[in-house]
Image 1 (cartoon, chains in turn cyan, blue):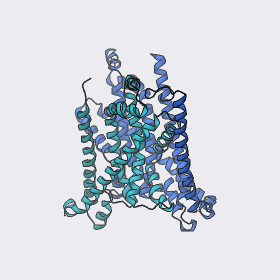
Image 2 (cartoon, rainbow over the protein chains, first blue to last red):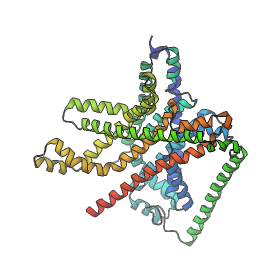
Image 3 (cartoon, rainbow over the protein chains, first blue to last red):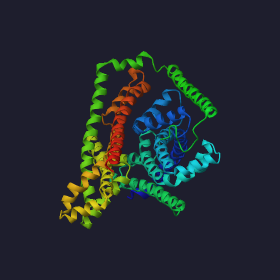
Image 4 (cartoon, rainbow over the protein chains, first blue to last red):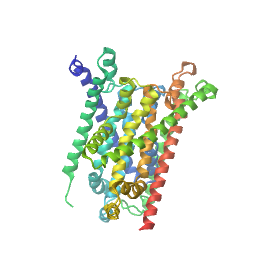
Length: 214
Length: 270
């Protein structure tokens, strides 16, 4: 019996689940990450502190613990949401800390003269950052953000153990049905490779597109 | 860096300072509001009720947590040592002169780096029917070892070429060049990255929870899911999270310290 073809629907469901988790969490991670990076370089002290604490705490929290706290803890706390949403929140917030650091070091690669020129034209902090510095930082930020999102895609595997449908979780059903477990894992591995390789191809493409001759 | 003299904004004058202070107060007020809501919710859902915190006074529960913490640290120690060894072997393989060795170690490293570490652990645990403790150590070693192999390779390659050329010109063999010229210099620059990777290893030991290995988080879950203690999920998180985060921050702090001291040393040398 062919493990993949017999259970294609099951694999597809898991694959789509992983894909959805990855996409939704990436959106959250990128949004919060860029926002927090903005906070960390802002002239307002409490915002800087907020960004710093956010990054330090989340970067040093094991993701499994975060899942435990968010998926199992929050409902006891009165915040009842679907497991998928909670998992996306946990993954998104966790990854946002790494995105923030990537963006911040990207901001540091932009030559000081750019910010100075923007200021001398009378731009304030928000405009300097969003119109001048961040667009130029984008180029330096693409590779580290790419590897962060690949790590995110791999981390979605944890969600399977917290009642979310995703690729790794498919082994349970197939194991019960008595399929060859090694082959099952082989196809699961292929599924993850497809996703991670696509992300890295996408980001290599972006890098090429944004490349400029210096 | 981004303190008072940033390229992104002018040194604030009296008006701007007043405005920033206003923003600051608004942000602070919002944060305090969120915090107050959290605390209110905590009381509202009775998270500070006596029967939820009482278990932490029981010697049995304390022993359970300490045993979990010990297991976590043991797993971390094993995985750290083994992955450093794995990384060293495969980095050497990737830097080898023999094409077959280079190719095989490249394949191994790239494969284990591309796999989610949890898939590796589950595969070893379920398909190979290894006991949880060994499965966890093996999975962590394969993944982190492969990442470290790339770090080592990058570090050795980043040593200026003149160093190895000079060593070869003095008649050293490849092994001697590696051991006495390249590796000592590479280790100094790589140390912060290596320790950051060890932080990842420490964080990933909590994956043992998912294969029911009795590590720290699993011990916490055993307390949290106990009906007799009226399911103290939030108290358990409040006890466990600071310990995990504290341990990881200590290691990260060490990495940062080594990085800044390395930078200082390089500056004085140049």
